[in-house]
Amino acid sequence: MRKIVNVAVFVAGLDEEYQNNVITGINDFARHNNVNVSYFAAYGGMLDSKIFDIGEYSMYDVADLECFDGAILMTNCINDMAVRERIISKVKEAKLPAVVFDCADYPEFININIDNTAAMRNMVRHVIQEHGAKKLNYISGPMSNPEAVERLNAFREVMAENGLSVNEEDIYYGEFRPYDGKAAIEQYMKSGRALPDAFICANDAMALTAVSTLEKYGFCVPLDVIVTGFDNTFSARNYCPAMTSVKRPLRRAGAAACSAILDIIDGKEPMIEHIEAECVFTESCGCVGAIDGVNHFSEYRKRTHNKIEDTNDKTQKLNILSARLAETENADDTLNVIKEFIAEIGCERFDLCLKEDWQETFSNNASAISSEHCMTAPLIWNKGETTCIELFTCCQMYPEPPEAGGNISYFLPLHFNDRVFGYFIITNGDFPITNLLCHTFAMSVSNAFENLRKLSHLNKAMSELNRLYVIDPLCNVYNRNGFIRLADDLFKSSITQKNKIMLTFIDMDGLKFINDNYGHDEGDFAIQRLADVIKDCMKKGSICARFGGDEFVIFNNKASKGDDDALVRHLNTKLDSINAIYRKPYTISASVGSIIKVPDSSETLYSVRGQEDKEKFKNSYGAKASRRKL
Image 1: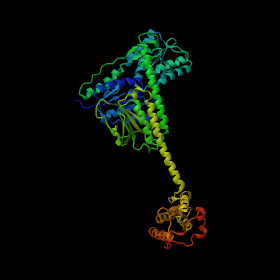
Image 2 (image 1 turned 90 degrees about the vertical axis):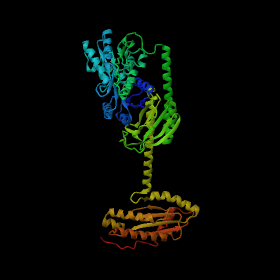
Image 3 (image 1 turned 45 degrees about the horizontal axis):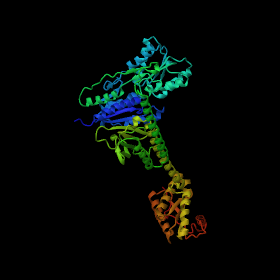
Image 4 (image 1 turned 180 degrees about the vertical axis):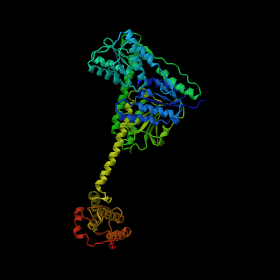
């Protein structure tokens, strides 16, 4: 019996129809053959933000290929060439059986190829020869994508064989995103050129928005201009007009990729079938052929309604999630809100995995998760039961790896711009590939953790500012503000409880002499040593403050008779010791005066302090050590 096989899949844009169909083919085969599949997915290139994309693409660094038996590279969906090459290099180094789609650039990988070139040639020939088009424009995918290059080259070849010219201004280079179709038409309209006979689009997503934008400008497809797509997606098949497109057996390609991995693991020569694409000529080019897809209008209406209803339902729940996450002020509340949402998305298991130090990350230099990172899983939702795991290593990837086969897991990143917090894993649930809102969910959760991180640093900053407001930075004792804030309350309670207080005034002797003769650094050193001595000698529960350059105050709200003499003895002993240890060319000494009394209700801390002129230094004490010279 074959051991459980684990396959890693690298992909971007889970919610698009091409990816959905290939993934569905992989998953169906994997479940039937007891294979575990882990998708490392990102939504890079969607928000036109390179900083955001750094955070998205960090997900690919999490995959530890030592834990896998094979890899499927849907890198044709990843438009960033550097990221794509990083993944390919990683797989090469791991020496795993690997599969790519529609890319012959890597002979060490198995290429599952659908003949895009022949299909695009047939499409362009049809528009020219059957519909008499002479002037054709092209809306392309990115040149970093091999499929986009193949389709554009096929367009150029057919134009040349029919004696038609192609100018660079006739080509719009997009990213395969729906927005590109709209942008291409708007750019063409601004150029002031006459409308071409046809717009040939490299995929359906761009073709559909091209048609809707043309209609906004008052043009009718196909009467005024032909528009064609590629992929024969559900939306394209059921649009009005139905889109002339290319039907590709994507699910079959996904299953073939997974099957090839198993063949290699079993020591067999992988069976790679030739997969052909088929043109579907229908309404958007002027043909009225059979529309592939939903043949009964009632079925189409029902399916569309269900899709809209599910999207509206998930949107409402996500709005509630976002609103509740905005109210949370700590990690526990945030996790509870997320936990309630997880039950709604329809999965068997959900793991929230964070860097151990995610909350401490202040700078943006945290764009990737490395194998050295320790991770924590504060929320694990498993069939309705919640647990957590305090620590696990990043190379494990899963807080608790699946023990059986046939599990489908989706790894998606949690980040704010290029600051990476961690990732989450959805296991045995189709939310990432069937709902357009999975990316929105990921962003909402990421923003919630960013808010918590900022709140944590704000609280720390406020705490530090508060400390600096009340602490003397040189001596690390309270300053005048801190003393008044704390001692005033204690003084008032002493009046109520009729406690005896002791207010002690300590002036350093000879600070000006030290500053003038040995410099201010030596003066600071002497003040610091005196502050250390005072802290060591004062009674527990007392408050010490530096009031001025050489002036210190101690407040004790539970004083006893003789505490003043005891304090002076301790100070003299400590000062003698300090002077003997450091042997400075000056003596650290101080004059001390104390007031001991039970305050009455008519008095305030200020009024007692006002008695300083009368009582202070009634008895003056200082260290007995004589001045020394170096």
